[in-house]
Image 1 (tube, rainbow, N blue to C red):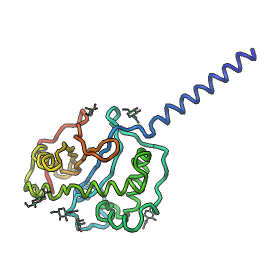
Image 2 (image 1 turned 135 degrees about the vertical axis):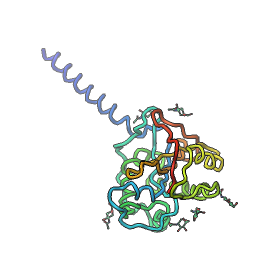
Image 3 (image 1 turned 180 degrees about the horizontal axis):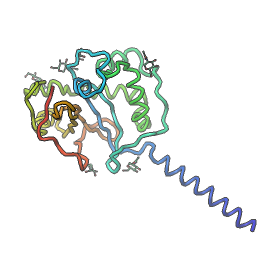
Image 4 (image 1 turned 45 degrees about the vertical axis):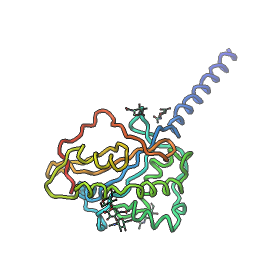
Length: 227
Ligand SMILES: *[C@@H]1O[C@H](CO)[C@@H](O)[C@H](O)[C@H]1NC(C)=O
Ligand SMILES: *[C@@H]1O[C@H](CO)[C@@H](O)[C@H](O)[C@H]1NC(C)=O
Ligand SMILES: *[C@@H]1O[C@H](CO)[C@@H](O)[C@H](O)[C@H]1NC(C)=O
Ligand SMILES: *[C@@H]1O[C@H](CO)[C@@H](O)[C@H](O)[C@H]1NC(C)=O
Ligand SMILES: *[C@@H]1O[C@H](CO)[C@@H](O)[C@H](O)[C@H]1NC(C)=O
Ligand SMILES: *[C@@H]1O[C@H](CO)[C@@H](O)[C@H](O)[C@H]1NC(C)=O
């Protein structure tokens, strides 16, 4: 009887360890990075409340650098890496990020960086610590100027003109030699698809840009508006 009890206890313990193992497996397992840039006027357009500190908004700016999984498109999250420390964004880096990675919605840039790090950055901490995460993101932003690539292809904000998905992807692909992804948001008042985000994909080490591949069930809008 005592023997049975202790082997039962052992089984329970073993199972608990097994659960811990399964649950921690979400940490640090990702396949590639998505570097997501956004067009701030679209954020402000679809937002229920107005953007708090409207700035001159003519650049694509960073939304985030997301470690991502091919098999699980919901990507890793709730990882156990370190919490954001604002000292890691030292003054020189901070002044760069204020241009490349502003919080256009509520105006608190530090809080935006904090939430992106805590939600996504922590999941790839073994590859990019906090300082590197923000430095690398800024370097990615600098490496290709999406605003200029589009402008050179005569794709500039316009109140009524629309473009197809490939009209917009083509010049970006030509400039970067890699396939990007586009994400749109529907304007609730006019029912038009507004260009919102341009996604670049990077390899596991966040060093080499790679082709993005589309996740199933995401239809390309036929007519995309850029305003
Ligand atoms: C991500 O993918 C890797 C391998 O492709 C897998 O081992 C890991 O469990 C996945 N992580 C999550 C959170 O889905
Ligand atoms: C756009 O980026 C350029 C280059 O970094 C910067 O000089 C300019 O101030 C930015 N414009 C806005 C409105 O943030
Ligand atoms: C995307 O491409 C990668 C690398 O080529 C491949 O391993 C992966 O299976 C692809 N995923 C999907 C969803 O097509
Ligand atoms: C901005 O966000 C940071 C980080 O969450 C917080 O410490 C700070 O108090 C906020 N600043 C303002 C003005 O709300
Ligand atoms: C990107 O290009 C736009 C349009 O040419 C320009 O206004 C902006 O300053 C450029 N940004 C950077 C970071 O060079
Ligand atoms: C945009 O066009 C200008 C003028 O032809 C050129 O100097 C610049 O390199 C182009 N920029 C991009 C990002 O293609």
